[in-house]
Image (cartoon, rainbow, N blue to C red):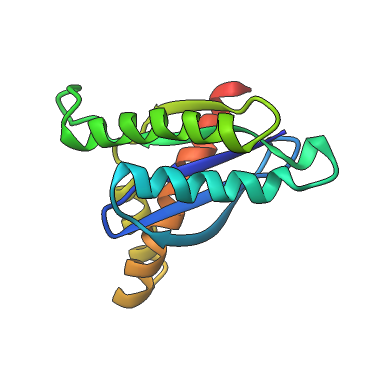
Length: 150
């Protein structure tokens, strides 16, 4: 089954999804960010879209939510938002999806910085960086998760 990765933001939330074999990560369009509840509903909508696939292998079986742990290793306010989002998402998925979906929090330190650096190196405009940073961060979260499973 596919893996969906999410980079939660207050302005935008980025998404990336794996292929059915879990080998590659493709970015998906971002959505407007917000509270844990708003983000959990948006994530559930994406999972539900993939749940409609006829083939079980094409459905999302795991959602990886970026956990913005502080540099000192402690969990701060943003980490609490990710944890609350994960809790709400599990609730929504039980109500809306007919099969079990695993929800995982994953350390996302430096993914936004790496995404910004990557776009700077590719000469992306400020507007492009602003629009695509969350997508690329989600893609990096997903790539790291997929690599850890190998």
